[in-house]
Amino acid sequence: MGIDIGIIGGTGGMGRWFARFFEKEGNTIHVSGRKSGMNAAEMAGTCQVVIVSVPIGVTGTVINTVGPYMRENALLMDLTSLKREPVTAMLESSVSEVIGCHPLFGPHVESMAGQNVVLCPARGNRWLPWLKGILGKNGASIVEATPEKHDRMMAIVQGLNHFNTIAMGMVLSRTGVDMSELLQFSTPNFRTKMEVLERVFCRNPGLYAEIVTMNPDARHLIDLYGKIITELKDVIDGADTSKLAEIIGRQSLFHQCQ
Image 1 (cartoon, rainbow, N blue to C red):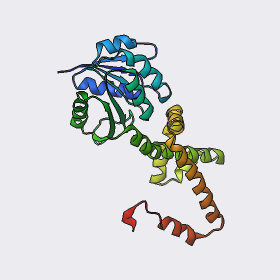
Image 2: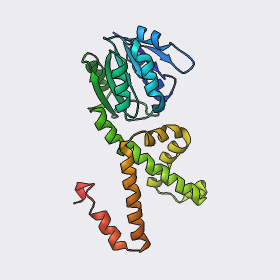
Image 3: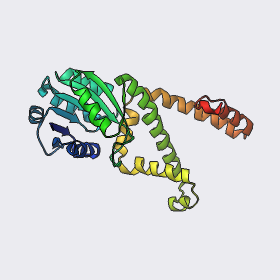
Image 4: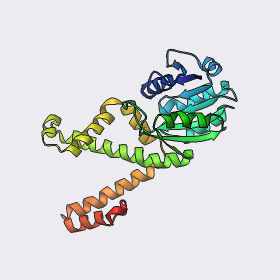
């Protein structure tokens, strides 16, 4: 039997994706955007589950708006790329059950099959089995973590990763190289990287800017990145191929290389 699910930010990419997803599971979906749909009180009064799917920078404000209206037997959850601040805000502003959720994919995927989803259960035990059941039935790989561990992992998976992509894109831009000509010389791996660059620079720069700047755990990694760039530059400036190979070979990142 379906339930009423409200999605604040349901007109955006991930909100719209999950609106379709939950609707296919037989639920009634209520969507609100910045200028349309139910207000916070109406949505909390109507829906057993309310999902916040808005940009990171306004997530706390939205949670604090809807949280006070949530009922004790309902579920408040978010889909944000960071978890510490949203989960804290949900706990402090509501009496409902709380689950932080981070789908580790974008709205371009066709289904949840094979995709990773992180859950940060924070209060209550009624709705967690329901959520895990519906995600698992659709093929998601579910991992539970604390908000703190999630954000530490995202500092690498998203923060450092996107920072590296932004830096590479800026280098390419400043070379003045013609991209159509560059692609004529590209390898399959480079073309894959260029697709990532296009996604970051062309589709939603604000999202990636928030991911890199708003996760405090990413900052020390970016500091380390800068130091390593300097170390590698010194070796490359000396044209010391043997030393660079030695540096690469002694890293313990991939144990199968040993």
